[in-house]
Figure 1 (tube, rainbow, N blue to C red):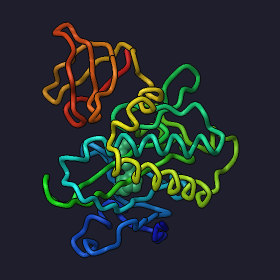
Figure 2 (cartoon, rainbow, N blue to C red):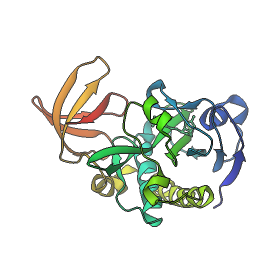
Figure 3 (cartoon, helix red, strand yellow):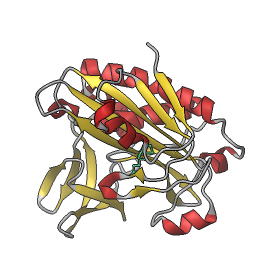
Length: 250
Ligand code: BTN
């Protein structure tokens, strides 16, 4: 099936645009891309900075029969879809940071290539809709690099040439359609092994940052069937949900 793609010259945030009340009637598979966002949203209340042409920014509205409770692995499979799309374009070394950052190793250091922000409509049981927001760096200017607290890299730098955003968006949408349909049918369990195979920190020593400020050292042992992170800690094996912790490599 087709996506309905709308490209805006400028918007505050494609996620906010699809989350607003008046967008509640929009069709399943609606995609809104923006050439420029003036108030891009990131996870944990952060902002997604972008300059004109600096990143590919788009959101998709996807409807589910199940309630939000069944969507715990959604953000993970979106990341996997993007890894696949980039793979098809020849970029084979992109990895995932749980729950859903796209990373690439460059000069001995992990750099963030893109991020995902999912916002849900509907309640835990009833039918729900997800606004799946994706931001992928194309060109990261020096100025911006100083405003972002972690190393970031753009696809143009990686490919050594300017990416055609239409080609990139097309590849992403094709991969997303397949992954979202498989996820709807079989759940995250279908992707569990594949996701683990692309996990940057699999079996690595990490520090887990809790919202309280507490830091727990441990070793990543896997991803559970519903998408939570499994970590071996001094207290034994523990399981964490997205949103509870943030992971730092050591
Ligand atoms: C993160 O890494 O914190 C997630 C970043 C998500 C950014 C994208 S850009 C398109 C969509 N619209 C937004 O306002 N945010 C997401």
